[in-house]
Each structure stands twice: as structure tokens, then as C-alpha cells.
Length: 228
Image (cartoon, rainbow, N blue to C red; front, side):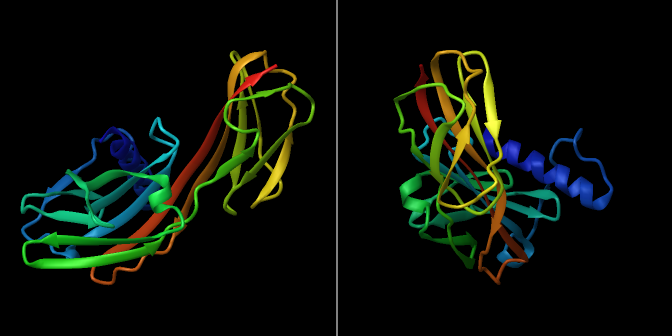
């Protein structure tokens, strides 16, 4: 649930930017609706690869449910089932963790039910980024040109190398299945990591029965290394 609250805070900040109302210092408002059928709801599908969970093999799927900027209180045994899994229900959200391999590049089909009303949404989920070189657990020599190979979507992203006491980062000029060179000479030797962090980007969803529907994904890939 703490992952979802962080996501909702981001939504409220964005809402404040677009309406002229500052939301940063407010608790997320909620509302109880007499009718929680799909046509009353604004739905945002948020997929997180490796950015909020400790395991890089897990993805977090959150379906934020609101009316405007107000989170919807569920009081009618509302249910969301995605790819055969019943999601946990919270104020203004349904949420569950999945293996990344079950979601990336696959179809997502979710059915929302409120009483006798139901609706389905569908999307094709984008792939997760992968660091190919160095591999997880590798010993990596610090140098002016440390090679990192990776696959990533076309969205802007950062590549961060961390050592025991410092870090360096790069914004690669090229995108997609590619590589970059990092100057890692300033890092101290010892345990560290490489992280590829992509910016939040939208993906299309279909679900005409809902008042509104959108989807976005945030993603990162991390490998543990030992700097030598």
C-alpha cells in the first residue's frame, strides 16, 4: 500500500499543476459514491518494473480508481481480476505483485465488477529494461570507459553506477538495444551496483466502459557488481 500512496502523491502534484491548486500539503481526498459502476470511474493503470519492490524479478501492478482527483472508497464488494489474479483492494486502488516475466510484453486483461455491473480493460504491456553487460555478480574494473550494454524502451533514462561511497551517472545519447561507456574511476573499490532507470511513459489501454482510462509504466533494472 505504501507504494500506491507514493504514486497517488505524484498524481495529486500533477493535478495541482494542471488546475492551479497546490496539492502537495494535502492528504489524498476520497469520496464514497452511491454508484461505483465503470462509467463513474476514472482509471489509471500503473505498472512498475523493479522500481518499488526489493526483488528485480517482481513487478507491481496498480489500478488507481478515482472520480476526478478524489479516490473512490469501495463499499460494495468491488473486485478487480487481472490475468486471472484477484487484486488487493484499498481506498482508491487495486494492487498486486506479479513476476515480471508474467507481464512484460504480454497482454493484460482486467475485469472490474461492482454489483451487477462489470467492464473489461485490455492493454499490451511494454517490456522491462535489462542490463546485459556486466552481468549480476560480476567483478568490474574501474576505468575511464566502463562498458555497459542494455536493452531499454525509447523513453529517456539514466544509467547510474554506485560504489561504496559515491556514484556516477550518464544520460545515454542513444536509445533502444545499445550500449554506453561510463567513467567509473572516481568510484572506490568494493560492493556496488549499476541501475538503469527509465522515466514514466504512457502506454495505450482499451476500456470504453470507464469514464476515462490511461496507462503508464516506470521501470528500472539493477545488477550487483564488485568494483576492482
